Length: 249
Image 1: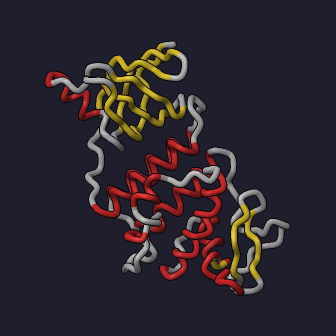
Image 2: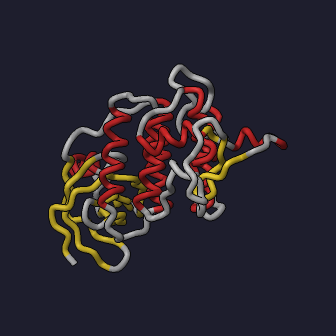
């Protein structure tokens, strides 16, 4: 099957054989797709190689054969955001989430739009913690396992003054005690309601939101941790208190 003029975001690229790349992209029409880009590491293919950098927005032509598509041409549609430090690591984390959780060749227009929003927010320097919580929420919704953050699993409204954990298949579950350090694994109802309404909660409550969403993500990852989590030593470098709150992943 020929794919012509497809828009996509580059998620990851790695060397393959002597002059080629294996590239993973998130497409507007075809969902997550693997591409074989042959001969792009030679000196005469610098423009094509530059277009296949992570987080680049591209338009490409390819021929789909089985699980992988063979890339014919690709061109950058804009300049990828120049991210550094925690913002760069946040982009790596978000791309890895898509690689691990989005099925191949399954159209995901909502996820494509959410990734584009994430990319723009990272490029504009918006607070990392809130930017990533919104993306995690939208990713889970797009792949069909989203939660209702405004209501407990039994249907009662979330109490902003209570504390909750997130059950991946049930939604918010109120925690009535704080024994055994359970408070460290909960979020406030106010933070969950903020997530539901797309309104940033107070800075000091973003850490709890990160922890409960991570438990949901871990469940859907099937017990296999992300390389980004391992790389950052449980993300310790990105979760120190900072002016913008408990940072990203």
